[in-house]
Image (cartoon, rainbow, N blue to C red; front, side, top):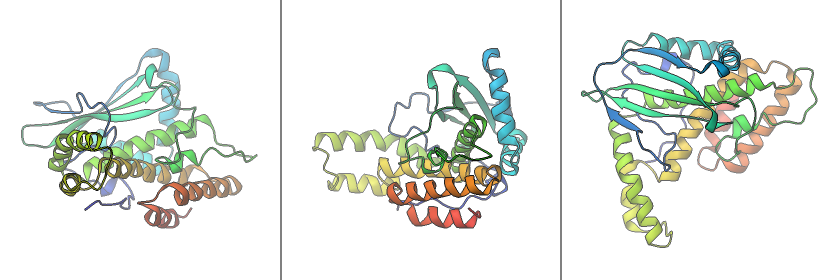
Length: 271
């Protein structure tokens, strides 16, 4: 069964074993998406070119100015069996991705990479999969407008949401999805995009959802984490009301599978 967005409260809720999977980039080119490797160095490794170091420092500082950001950063920085690499690429521009998941011979997830675009402080993603971050695209004139740093940090929080999702998901399921999603997509293309094909129904049951549902679920994990960050950073009441109104509009209009859970999460975090 496809499982919708669960509640995410803090990094303290993350499983220490990190037997997990990613939801980012499902259905895209997944070369080097996962592999098995030997011993490694744990903690967070920041691989940032000198030309991006100042802006990265501002984005990171904004993310760490929130309690939820600090908790999650400390969790991965101190984890004895997991290494996280954070880097910046010009080609990614306004976006970001989390991939390159690796497991040891025992099947434990031991590393992942977050790649940030060089201009994540600009550009608002599509509201269909990113209803929260898109909600920052408000035209409201406010005494405390949304800055580029807040937008960038919200995108970083979204990527940490993918890591949190990985920490709570069975790694065996991820690897099964990795194998079956291309088969699903091939059948769908060859049958003229008829979703009711019994073969697709069987595959979706084994994977825990269709490729679109799996991708959507992963992105909403990221958005839930971005919401936790924004709850702490948007303190000006008028601005907060405007952003929350846009988020609710996005969720109501686009978040078909997780609408009720998302609205409940908004209430639960006090937005």
